[in-house]
Structures are given as C-alpha cells and as structure tokens.
Image (cartoon, rainbow, N blue to C red; front, side, top):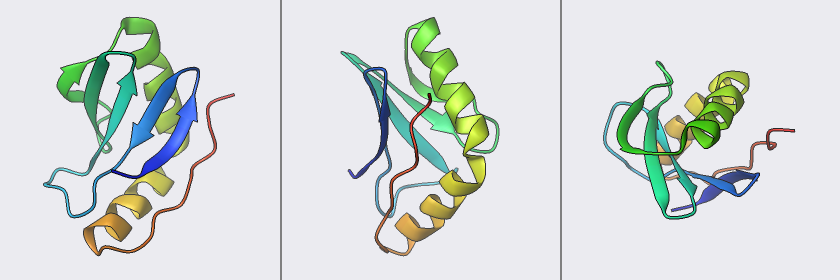
Length: 86
C-alpha cells in the first residue's frame, strides 16, 4: 500500500484498485482508520481524537488531490506524495 503522506507520526496510505467509496488509510502507532474522502468520516477502525483531528484537517486541505490519487490508484497508475500537515 503506497504511502502518500506522513506527518506528526501519522502515515497516510492508499491501496491500488481498492473498493468504493473513495477513501484513504491513516495509521498512528497501533491505531488505524479508513477515512471517506467525500465526507471525511471514519468508515472503519479508529484513531485517537487528536490524531483524527489532524488527519481530517489535512484531508480537508487536500481533498482534490486525494480524489485524483483515488482515480489514479483505481487505474493502477503511479501515485504521488501530498505535502504533510504543517
């Protein structure tokens, strides 16, 4: 699963040819969550509240890029990195 961003110990990844709805995976230590790109809600797993807040803030700033990466991953095209949350 390619890593598309990393910040404050949080790793953001996306699978190739993954199932709908468009989403990404966020990992923080032993925690992991699946986040819907359109709604920015957790659709699986969990993250500590502070980490989840940072992930949602980052995703809201990069929603267009996340949707582009989802489309690229669906077509097995190379993925690019998205800048981290600063």
